[in-house]
Length: 221
Image (tube, rainbow, N blue to C red; front, side, top):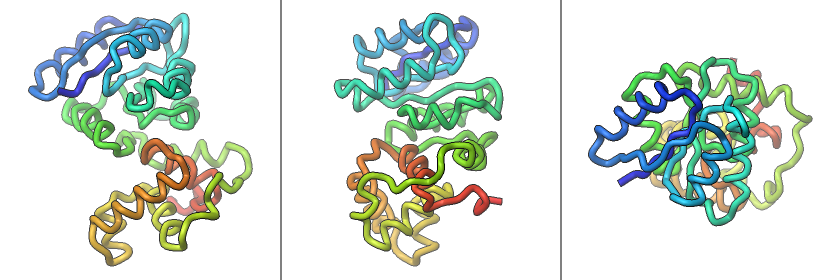
């Protein structure tokens, strides 16, 4: 059973998500929070698999709450998916840098929300179709000048190539086709790259790809 905590200051939003998630045989909502501070407390108490976290909340915003969760080693297995009302949210890139595994717009299709919850538990990065990797690129372009990520020098040429493709939003299957290797080989390269760079999931590997300069926003146009 995938255990989920909902964090949103709007009761109707939480009720809608709960109804959808609880109707699934493999997903269950174990807690609800109306602000970021309560969300952090619940996560520490309940240790859920996934937190659906609104970015804008009272008392403590979702970005700060996500950072606190990400900084707690005891919560390393908790995956946070940020929820945003607008596709172009100024905090999205910072949210992923802070430890979120991805983000969704609140009016996403029910099937996409369910896929999202299952995907982050499986260790995949999640980018809402309405936002996509172009938004990540946009905010990456506004960040500081590219600097080599710690451990980048330990990557093989193939691992650097794979990391760049991950940063461009390709799935393991797409990477396999691009490099003419098996999907299992592509997955292995991705996993090894994440371990060498200390990335907790694919979303952070995307951020590192931009910040290290392996991928530039213009490549996605």
